[in-house]
Figure 1 (cartoon, rainbow, N blue to C red):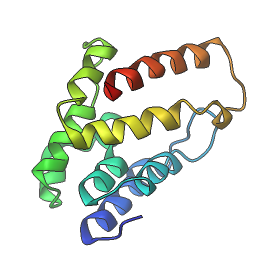
Figure 2: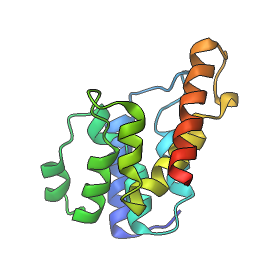
Figure 3: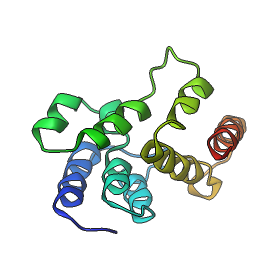
Length: 142
């Protein structure tokens, strides 16, 4: 992982935001953004990977992130990555193509979320989710 002042700040925020959350298998959720961040090539993508679910899953806001000193570049990517449930999923994904940071992080996110070995039990719901993610990966890879 790339360690800078901003990535360390994002690591701490990510941990605090997700420390009491679990993924679908009961593992600490925070392992997921840490895993994504490990794959990122630069500071902006690393910070975005760490914070990619913070606004969606916690009370954290863009204004709060600005106050903490995170860049507009990162905040724009995070806003794009925050899925408004009123927007159809593949329409949301298509918008991410416009932003190289959001696109890079979302591709890593989709690949990790498609890894069925993370699950204790693979059911029809999991298989349908992986199929949805396969379509999203194809769309972002065009």
